[in-house]
Amino acid sequence: MDNITEFWNNLGYNRFLLILLLILFFAHIFSMICRSMILLSKKKATSSVKEEGVSVIITCANKAELLKKNLEAFLTQDYPQYEIVVVDECSEDETQDVLSDLQQEYPHLKTSRIFPDTKFRRTKKIAINIGVLAAQYDVLLFSEINCVPEGKNWIKTMQSYFDPNTAAVIGYSNYEVGNHNINIRHYFRFLWFWKAVVLLKYGMNVVGNGYNMGYRKKYYLEKRGFTGNTQEYIGFDTEMVRELSKKGSVKIAKETEANIIMTDDSQKAWKDDYSYYYTTMQRWPLYVRIISNMDFWVEFLFYILSFYFIFVGILYEYMAIPIILTFLIDFIVINICLKRIGQKKLFITSFTVNTLGFIYKGYYSIYSIFTSKKWR
Figure (cartoon, one colour):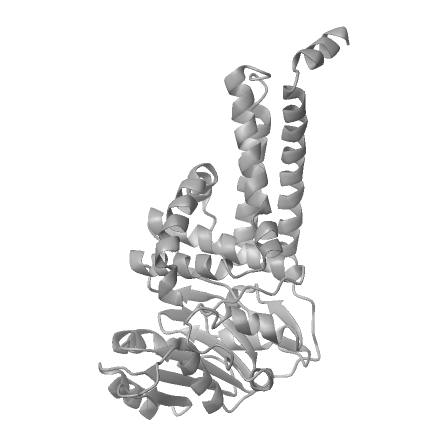
């Protein structure tokens, strides 16, 4: 006992850092458990939801090859009453020919077009507005032409979340697991989705997903769509979630059949993806940004303090225990959560990101600072 007292007294100011280290360790473990329980929670059974007609809206510009490759996956969904509305944004390639050919085979394909000589500035929001006005059904689903549904029940699964009190539904979208770089991108997109689930759980309705989301047309029209801001690309998804959350609940679809696969896994697509996410995040309220990044800073400070004690030679022979425990808990929990939403476990990737993820995040965050203007 005397030895412990003497050791404690000899720590000096380091005793406060040791207490902080323990607090950070248990805070991180508690946060991981709580956040994983939110993601792992099952969908509540809703027997009252009826099958409504659904309009799927996709905007594209000069994407004839992608239309040939991907649109059929949307057109062949296993759902009794739906339409696909494609809005052509001033394409000058073979887009119109491809759409005309597809309409011969699929009568539930509707098209609208913004002509290249249009006088006003065309934006993503204007194209979406044209698609919404052309849609005949109240339930609207949105995706991109560089994506495909994971299965034929995407519409059915997403629509099952729309009860009379539902304003918006957000689904999961990600790249297919492939080489090491793709796996890292896949992992980061999973972490973004996990963050969205947690934020929405606590009523912070700031996250959207233009690759896979839906909302009700009547609420969109009541809010007058993007009337207040049509000239910026940014916010075409998040603005609607924020505004429509005032009309009803925002739900998250975690079933595998509600997933969307992103087929464009090029470096440019990934950089645009991260840049858009980062720029959008800068518009979140300050308290939301603080809360959303709290887990990262808690873990980061924990590792900094752990290596500090190793460096100064205080309890260095024991510091490996909390470090290894933290990594193992993260490793196990994250891969369980990946499995929950129908994703392959990423053992090597989760190890890489857990140890070097701050390098990736730092690089792309700095890159995004210089590219954020493209979204405004």
